[in-house]
Length: 141
Image 1 (tube, rainbow, N blue to C red):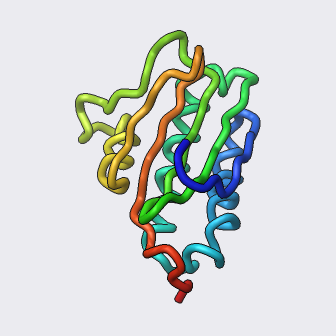
Image 2 (cartoon, rainbow, N blue to C red):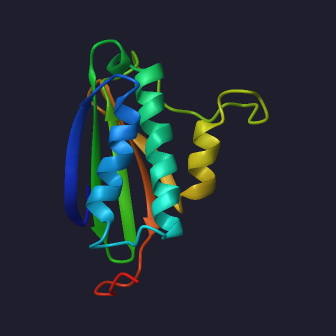
């Protein structure tokens, strides 16, 4: 992770952790970095929800494991990272049919983030997404 680490939270791999992850994001970024009405905050919250949900549904995190969320800020960019307990070597990939009733999560991530990706962290998978931030030193509105 590059830039200034803002906060890290590890949660159990259960469905009720998704709203906790969104609250963690908002509590970390408001009011010091973004305002409650900032569109970037809404986009980041939706992406965190998708990534945490994927970690719980598709990885060992949802089978008694955990999921870790890290937030950082670098010149002009916020970065969110979600690390799961691994999925037996499987890695995240957008569903081939985004018009289906499920499988649209990574398409949403790609549409909202300026960049996103993933990499192996041993048996675990770290998925990251970046979002533009105001210039350093700008005061929240």
